[in-house]
Image (cartoon, rainbow, N blue to C red):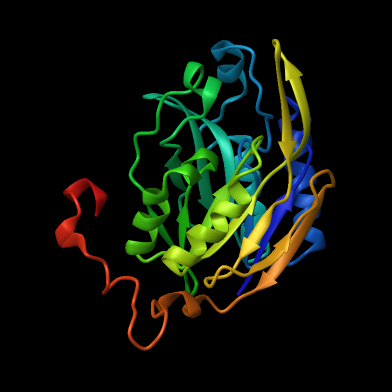
Length: 265
């Protein structure tokens, strides 16, 4: 199975332009599954909740969902992408999986970072597994990475590939995702953006370095920190079903959950 990330420099507020730019990158690099960055079509630094509301979209009928769904269906692909979700119960930093055939599968970010807490409502959806062709996909968003229980829970639910849209500004995540892959024996694909946004007195410099890591922690590719690019990795997803470290150690069977608090399981 071919999995790809798209690393772009979004133009703030230009949804149609940013979506079409991402599609152009995907057209240049055929794959089965694409992962786009967090909030890739809108940009990240919203000056107010009112501005966020003006750019947020419904999960199913928004321009981004419809346009990416059309591309996915025409190219027999699946796409995971980040977007600001406008819903009856709030405004969420969300990601969705679309294939253009089934209804989008939506995950709302559980762990909001910094000033996101002043703009978005905290996620209220459970972690989910998406079945696409022969693969089982998990989704988490950006700062979720710092909580290892998120990736662990997705792996315990059966995820073979964790799709990770991000807008990273700190230098730690890429190394951490190597650890997430090792400790859970899963593939991870982190799709970041590049560039700078300076709005409303807040400057964010995004670190790029989108990354694909295999289920043994080998980095298959890490992108540049300052260039738009995409990369496709050809993986065998069933490799992630092997949880054996050696003939005597299995990461699931060796867990001493009898000595862990229920919330740590």
